[in-house]
Length: 149
Ligand SMILES: [Zn+2]
Image 1 (cartoon, rainbow, N blue to C red):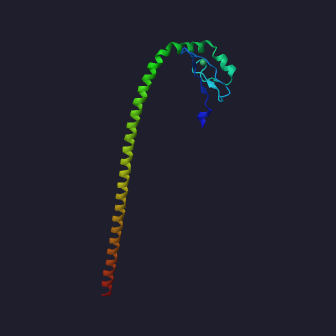
Image 2: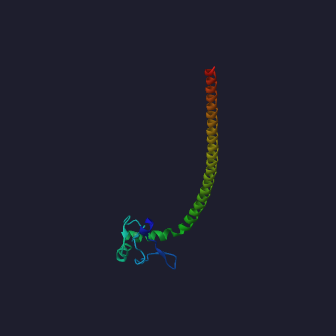
Image 3: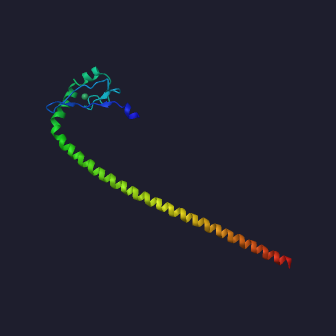
């Protein structure tokens, strides 16, 4: 799967005081490198521990971590808001799925009706053809009778 080949996204750890702190992840586990969401170098993939270690010492990264800690009280509110959104999205998806299921059932029903109608039309045509054949045969017989006279 191509997803497995994507680099990992760095996530800071939390210390005993519930502050975000930088902990360099083990690059033995990380096979595709790591990207940092701090925005210092967009899409830059860090492939080694020393590379990432020097990155987290940059001013911009430190500022980002500081901002994370300043905003952390907002995260719970944000988390609750997102939970509400997920809940309402689930309801919307379920309603849409129900609508799709109903429409599918209607399509199946109408397709069956159409097939039945087509079959009836084919039968009617066959009967008409057979009747015309019989008429033609009867006409031929009549004409032959006339010729004999
Ligand atoms: Zn960073």
